Length: 112
Image (cartoon, rainbow, N blue to C red):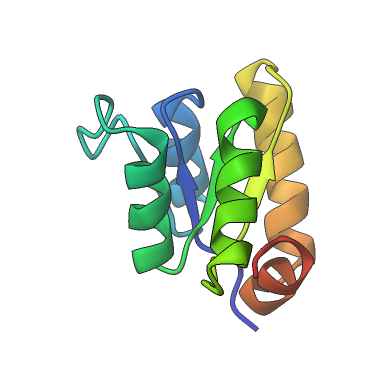
């Protein structure tokens, strides 16, 4: 089964997206797409439209977005929330996730 596709929001370094792409994963970033000024709901809607899980450190805004989607009967492809960590730590964590879950597994675990 295919690995999850990810979208890293503005709180996560775009360098990490580039590193993961070099390893063969489908990863985009808010910064690379020049969406830094977009609100979190816009970034999340973009991720959903691309069937991507969004990766963020912004628990305050993305947890309510998850609830909103569920309450409205909408599906999404997952929200991966992290603590603020150096890029090598995030890279290791995301690689573990990408290598252990399919996109369907991630959607079931934290999507909708």
